[in-house]
Amino acid sequence: MSAHSDSEPALTMRDVAARLGVSPMTVSRALRGQRGIGEATRQRVLAEVAALGYRPNKRARELRSGGPSELIGLVVTNLANPFYSQLAVGLEQICVSYGARVMLGSTGEDPATERDVVADLVDRGVDGLVVVPAGHDHGHLGGLRDVPVVLAASPPMGIDVDCVLVDDFGGTRDACRRLVARGHRRIGFLGLPPSLWTGSERFRGYAVALEEAGIALDERYVSQHRGDSGLAEEAARAMLALPDPPTALLTANNRNTVGALRALRDRAPDEEPVSLAGFDDIELADMLHLPLTVVSYDPVELGRAAAKLLFERQASTVPQPPRRVTIATTLVDHPAPR
Image (cartoon, rainbow, N blue to C red; front, side, top):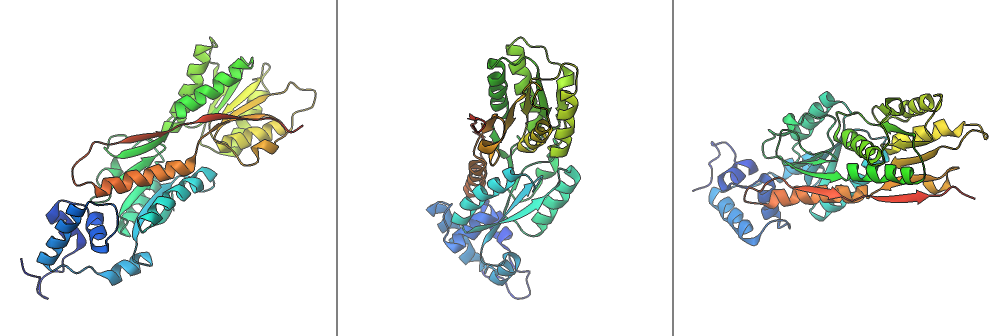
């Protein structure tokens, strides 16, 4: 086929990709000689580009991204949570090796805002998305043309995409088992909304550990709300004010752990000590005034794994079933300073 004349509409990278049955990112990598695609695919792209007379609009890409790089969108729920900054570090480490840059958007844990943020990133021309979803409805992520999506910290609901998870159930069960092994029978749980995967799975780990130990679940010792340290502190104080308060607290994320620590800080010296265990490690945990057991994992590895899935999906020229990667957890005991 001969090159387009000046009167014909200009070819786009998406046009070339559609003719070859590959992704626009695959075409982009072939043209720039980047890693991530096979040599046979590279040669097929270059041959088609030559036949069509396609010339990439380099100036448009540079204006779009600030340089000759691909763009990967990262959508998170709460920028105040250190978990997401570490996830972003891991994502960026892999993106840099592919010549890509990361564009960040935050939803404030609001599903409607998530839709707007995703739409804005797609309009800005991102080549892929890593999304920590704000709710359980992921349908709006299933129809993004030529933009692959990887979910982080939640499995897909109603769409077929790759995901990277933390062992939320196993980690929480292990932490609750540790408290039970130390003799605790009244264990308060400062959880997350049950509509979230992390919320439901971490509560399930807590409930299963109690059931295994023959301990009846007492609703007075359960609070499930969005990860906010102020709400967690309020819930912890309410539990500790009960006639038969919990002797241990188990928190579902680092923000809830901070709230629990604030509630415990004001207890009188003659009051019964309350043990604390929480999901997510927190900075300076080893310098606290009380012992703390944390469910630890590597959020940087979570970001790296999400990026690898994304680039592997882009490089694939044949349909593949959705993949799931689970990041393992470990228990870490931080004893109180002597």
